[in-house]
Image (cartoon, rainbow, N blue to C red):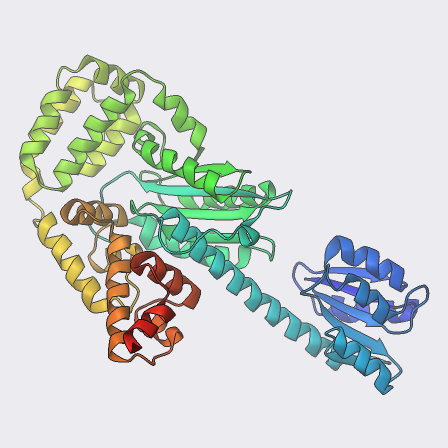
Length: 487
């Protein structure tokens, strides 16, 4: 919180500053001005959250100073300090948006109450703004609903956009095995709630492919803090053989970042060539992509792993046949032996061995083919149908990819893949379709219902968000839809 004390009396400034310091406000900055001219200069550079301003000051009085900087500091909470209580000052102050007075000598309890009230207001304001940011970013990344409002997302000169994509090296089938969603996600949520300042925003969500993404709008310094936090969090939680994080950045706006993330998403399978429990810039995957035959080789390995998890023995054996005596793949194996063995053996449930030759590797894969039936069978078709039925019944509740994956004991990545393959539509788009269909039904049954009530009944928490999704799906605004019903 930035607090300004503007008073020409030095003893008053010292007294008020002591009150503030005794409150031990985290990340607080206290600024001082001896006259109205200094107040104007400080406000033009810092935009304080809270300002205690003496009415009677030399050079420029307090009210005139506030009037001069009102447009530069629209969100500042102005508190007048005065020994005068004439009506003329009150009228002038009200016109400037000043809502509170503190009469000198200032009482400690009154000042503490104002500061605490401002703290709570700023906290809620930050949460609301960050929630709106998260809605916009999630919508933009998944290409639905809300348009990009440039005035909301416009970068200042010292800010950038960063994206972190989290991957697990195994195709986990149950939530007990998934470290990423069982442990890392809750820890990250909790840390982010205290991390960002009023100038930073963060969005934590799953993209349409089921990959966990963290997008932040901040400075290089703050992004480095997140990388350091993740660098400590991964090994502390025992993720040495599962979770890997990749990141990219953009100084050209959110749309540029989305394009970079799309490329990074396509390249994520190449991450099995890298050491786990680490954080890598996107350029590391770009370098791996330049290796001859690397994409084809990794596609064979990941395809074999997927077919094993899907219990598709025919597809599994086809991949295996292509891998046996495959000289280019053998060269890639020799170059990235340990991470490839870790990834494949962990996915197939084989005992770890970092020294197996390529021939031994292929032989073990061949012998493991029958083991895919030992676990309880998972039928992708039935699973996709069950997910659709669940969404149709629970569309008003949390049916995000993460929530659904937890409900069905599978990872978001696998859920997204199965649903899209079976239904030919992204899960996120299907949820929107179901919600908008029910919104239309509700408005037909009750044409006079408030749009904000419809928003909540179909599972949205922002009327603006619901309106934009409705407009995209139906082609008209909800209010226009209601008018047509009444006609």
